[in-house]
Image: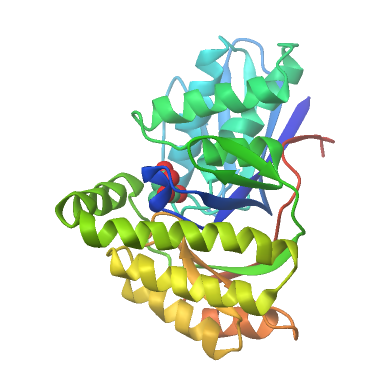
Length: 317
Ligand code: MEV
């Protein structure tokens, strides 16, 4: 039996502007997806039983699917198995990460599955190979959509600055609270909406993107100095600019204001917006008050650390 796990991610600054080559800052978080692989002669079975959903399993031959999150996990794992011509396996997927919420759940599943298969089949892939194969597989399943940030963070962990290239940054870990609005989002349509706004109002949206780039760059320095007040201010400005380009929602704003009202240094949506999740930087008293306020505002709230470890092999339980 072989198992590997990989982290999800948040984008601290720079979503959407990064599509136009402006720097964004992402961090791996300590919510993980785990993939366990075992021999199963004559069959290939994928079990997606612990995706914060009801447990069940799916036989690839009979193909019974009963939930979107598990169906999603199965699609990504199937693509990994196909890529490496792997069969006669039982593959179990467990994940702390809600699907389709911008926290990199599919990238974490693809990276963990690739790393577990790498070990199980002695494929000899390096970490760099795992990151690039996983990016290719995720992008193919998503029909050409998928930035390399999610699979790179799931593989290498830590923090990455992404613009035209990807640069690992050595920055301190941070406690954050992630709040999920419960509304699934469609990254492709949010990206298309913002890019179309950029085309129609380039002289206005262009400078907004430049300002977001300046926030990302300054954010790296403030994070290095652990200037939480400054970071919170930048998160709030970035949120305003994301609202300006139309990717905010009422539910996300309610979570943002609930977090700020409970004393967070700052709060903003993370990822594509239009649903999905937001992040808050809790005050020195800790994250529990902020998390509670976000739950009262009907969000699902998790305290996380950012800048966490990338893919790793796991002991099997
Ligand atoms: C989505 O997680 C982040 C976006 O910037 C899109 C992308 O970078 O591919 C909205």
